[in-house]
Image (cartoon, rainbow, N blue to C red; front, side, top):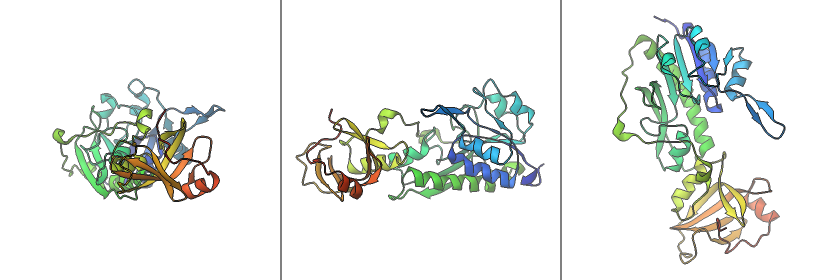
Length: 318
């Protein structure tokens, strides 16, 4: 039996920025003997090699990095490390059963939702877009399904109207790191009460497709408000204005029904306070935007620099 976390030999699997605080917390508290992350990418016009945030963190801390193209076929080096436990967080590949069954304390996942709600690769996006009032972190045993394993521990957080994808992402990332360290002792001594997920309560948070980033102004003002902030700042929801892409990063909504005879998506007012767009049950006001070919800016600066005739234009009209 491991008596101290410092004696726990950990292999960590993760890729994006969300997973970095989790890895850093493990480095501070345990013996991280290896890190597995996705292969490097070629990005930009100059085709430069880009490391994942987890690889950069691992190099900084002098930890050996493994980058299998397909982990289901390239796993022997990981088993040869003989880890006590494998911990994953937003790794990005399905872990084969031979790895899941190998460590003494099994494979543990840090997932950014209150499972069984929002299984999948984009739970933070969907928590906001789908109008959830709360979300959280789940520490779970891994099995061969997608986020289907037994729950070990959970922690909740309220989703505020002031939250967007970035703020909720950052808050959950820190929560995940903290909850994992609190939970590890119960995994080691076997005192945790693993809880099977209720399949009747399952929802999904699949990865967002490009076509799903388009804002549909026939929806309600709250649905549009949630979608805009659930995609902000990356990838950013968008509309089409005279066939140009208008990225939308922040909005507010009004109950004003005085423009009910206007078409959904019609701009009914444009000044330094916002671009006012008619929707099904009121107005959505765009206040942080980026028009194709221009820089991202708040609406006051955009208005001062772009005295455009936008009133009565209809967004998303081809």
